[in-house]
Image (cartoon, rainbow, N blue to C red; front, side):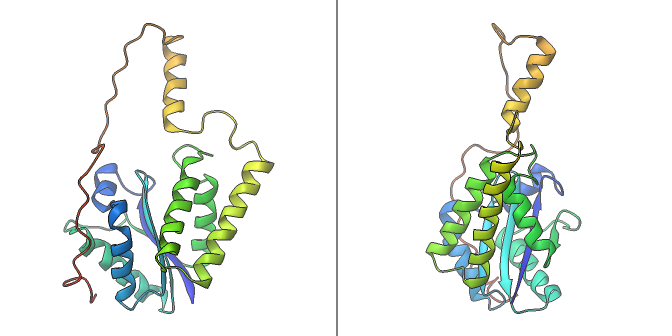
Length: 209
């Protein structure tokens, strides 16, 4: 059984596409259950953040067949009908494991070394674990990734300086204006701060890919 990764991130797609594939946290257990009920995937973890949506899966299928099934799940689950090509990436071993370690360590983040992603990854794994969607392969991979992330943050200076988009923005503003004292700040962004949880992927249509 091999570990695969399929997803999209700030490296591959704009925020307008990423937000279309975001999973509501309240619906993740039901979506994970539906994914595994398809019969293509033995173990799964879904990571959904503002910068990435990724499925980590352990499967006995050939990578090509597994990737096709996972892509179909993503598209049908989110009712995405536009073309989807380079926005989506697919990784098999050993690249899939290398990617997991990089994500956990903040090496694949928008700001190098940011720490929030590790907590998000731990939460995604813990949710899948609690609902019985992980097994020997993913448990071992994620525990190793968490250990590697801890070692990197302990033994290097990767966390030194600004490690979030917000802190980088403030640092840049201070360089431009010399001081932010008595300045008025306006924030312009994309997306929705809060969404009503959507229903889980319908088991009627996407159950067979």
